[in-house]
Length: 153
Image 1: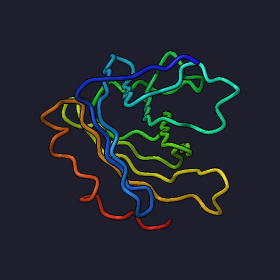
Image 2 (image 1 turned 180 degrees about the vertical axis):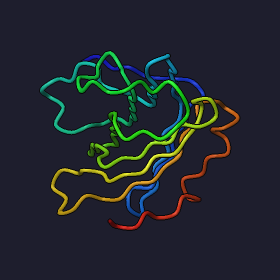
Image 3 (image 1 turned 120 degrees about the vertical axis):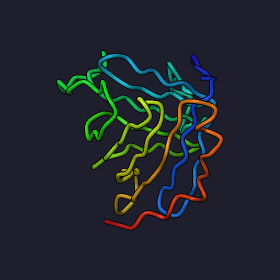
């Protein structure tokens, strides 16, 4: 199994239902056609002997990313986006964000996200709210406990 450990000043704080999550130590890439964030530790090549995730990671890809297959519009400026991929993993659990609204601000150095988490074996999707920052100055101000508990849709 190959593991990728991201480092840098980026940080994401989330509330999944009432539960706070804090993903630190990562990087943002603001390309002319896309925006992406990678934080934590990610398994680059999973192996069959790993039953459930034993790592923590957050990934967000917006815009016309090389891995995009849906013909998404570029995410070249600050603004509101509904396409893209947002996934995050904590020990034993993997989440995918659906019905998402992602707002890029600060010349694509920060923003907010909201949606619902699709959780395996959960009866209903769980509401999610969060904030992210790509610089150390922005990341210091983030507090997962300050994010209001999202209301169920």
